Length: 128
Image (cartoon, rainbow, N blue to C red; front, side):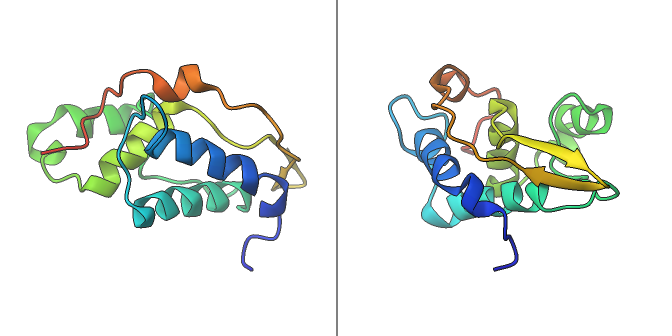
């Protein structure tokens, strides 16, 4: 188990991704493999040192991400997984956590699903 803190948020993470991928007015239609990619990204974020950060994909607030998405040349090369990750990040859910001694400390996450965030229309089209 490379992600020893996942027991603190794993159940809620899986509820969140189920809603995102398959629930109600789901923003994305994920395969099981794509849903596991979301889990992996969340686990990496919750188990990294503060000196580490994800450079791609990022939330659209990062200037270089916006430039990539606005460029037809680069945007046309995004994979289905890239587009899915952008949509997941735009939803804005992450486990409760804090930072201490240069590390991420995941906290128990029992939060109810925020369906308003997950059900809003995606600005990233997953198809075509």
